[in-house]
Length: 135
Image 1 (cartoon, one colour):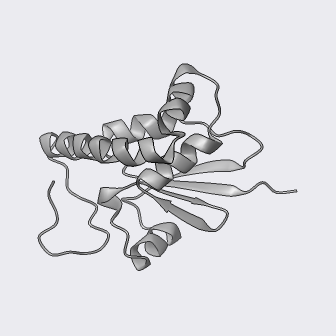
Image 2 (image 1 turned 30 degrees about the vertical axis):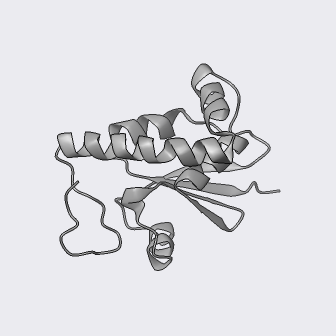
């Protein structure tokens, strides 16, 4: 029996996002987590773009045919995460609440955007908006 594939789409050029995605683990009974770099062309990136979701403004989790974006993605990820290791337990306790996730996520996103601005990174700009290349 094959296990469900769960896709986590994020910006690999963001050091904070990359570290988070390398540490996060999901429970074995949930499925197999596949991490996808949002800067690379892929079927899931095209699906996200077709839905009008701006990857620069939120990570995406696809699980069971459902797309979770931004605070909903980090909340869903917390619910399916393993509790092994300090960082995974912290992730679970911080984001297991949908309300707390929706309050913290914009702060984390703002910090991410500031970090990428300082590092002089370009935006992914998957929606192709003119003049939307820099943070």
